[in-house]
Length: 584
Image (tube, rainbow, N blue to C red):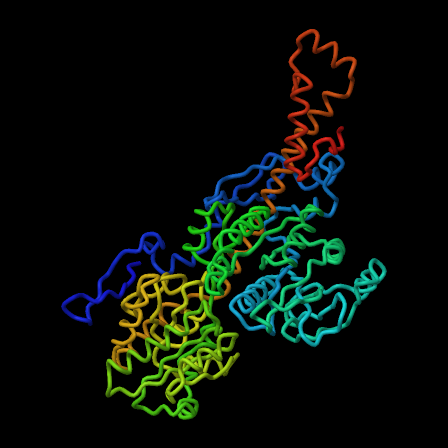
């Protein structure tokens, strides 16, 4: 897709130029950006069981290649003594395509916290449960929850198979530190979560309303042992996520991670620019230790691949086009802002923090007022955060800049739909859900050429400027088209996102999960083959010695090859010590 990059010429301020942004993969259409990888390229493992399908796996850049497993699930289970894997891990490596999965989600942000990560995770998990899979949750304890680590059984409206009443008792018997409750303090969990482990939370510096979870390794390990999930998905890289990654690896459970936030860019906005390099090094270590990492956009995938991140899968984003709809426009809400029919209402929805560029939006609005003196304009800033007081000071003296605070649900949908254009100045997004929500609400987008805006916006539904070009951003907004043209652009913006349901990214996430499980099954088969060769060689040491003296060719010709085989087997099964292998 050709993106419109706003670059005023020397002759006229209204001119724009059209540039191909190849490094953002704009050569494809917006629809292709959200298409799941072809799941029909899976091939049958006909050697042992024609009914077992082994999906494709991904290399470091997401390119998929064939993997072959010569092991059926039955043979895997009967040779657990050779692989060193626990029986429940063997059972979860079933690569049958339609097998319902039990997923444990680990995240340090979850509803009722309102941000792009928590809202996206809720949508993805809801879709997976609707497909017949089950989800358990590990998260920091929300404010108001009782103290101490706890496990909660939450009756699920969507999960087809609920745990029995004995399940809760098992937790209490296994660990007195885990208190079992019936129900949940967080009604947001009820539709989709079967079990919840809540650990102690600590406030994040400069974000007192947000928390990170303490690394409760023992509780997490016990929870995973009891849940016996097919896969663990870790959405955040904090202490809780690291402890969960370590526990999953210790238990040899498949584990994936999600990259959602450009923390290495955020640090520059908090006066901690020196931390950018150590942060990206830690993130690289964290994500490369997992079996796969999902990213929300081709640009993020490209950037992380250049940093050395491995096994990247694109799991896009969706938008609820029924909730975010132009029909939600409210004349009463506009009147509460003091906006009449003659007003142009600019909307920005964002967390109010330094990295989001809200100050640039305010400056751009002020430039628009100066440029078009006879135009009645309102700027509505929706959101809350640590930078709110400074931003209100910056806007002081203007009655036409209105801070509404954070909005949710129908109220948020009305705020979007009651505006005329969406102005977004953040340059640190991995995706930016607010862009697609605004487009679904019928608003044209004026933003930097990055993330969701860079993937979806062209001259038919808004305008973009190159990253870092603050001056041209201000000039782009100052020359905003008239309301009638904005309405036409907004109609095209909505058309652009109508096909972006949340079902598509959920299918992409499910493909990643099953590819990881199939890859582990294939590696397990290779480990067993090596172990069997070693066993065959060692059945009769005396015969082995005689045959070696006679120069006979065996599957493994000498003791050096035995050691190499054992080392390979230990790597494939996840053991760090080759001498701990059962055949030694």
